[in-house]
Image 1 (cartoon, rainbow, N blue to C red):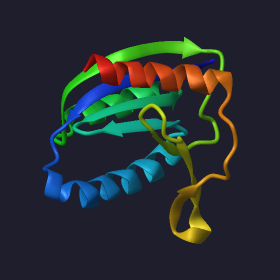
Image 2: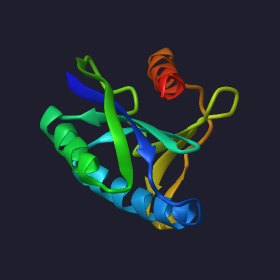
Image 3: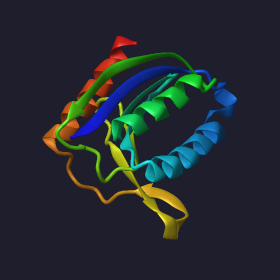
Image 4: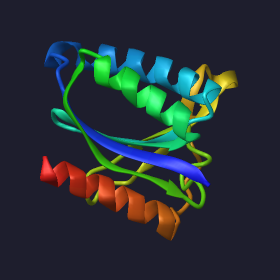
Length: 142
């Protein structure tokens, strides 16, 4: 069993600072998530984030508590939180999830290349598709 939490939040980062600020967030998050054995996927669309986090329940809840206190987010809401049989993003330290019609890009940690790099193309599983669809639906509900 593993714990999955999906949340939605409104992005408070000013547009001119987004690229550099999001880069810094991803860098720290990937490192910290790996240490905490948390995997997942992130959807960014306009001013909204939807993220799925998977791992041990105490670690995932601690990370969400930290995210709740981050001033770069507002209007956080938990979309789904439940125990599941297994991780669906076990190979993904982070992923950029697209809006409908664009490809998803799993990102894997690659120390030799200086950070995260796109994973080799491979089809998503039906289980991954179900979670990704739920994330996209949460975006439409915002």
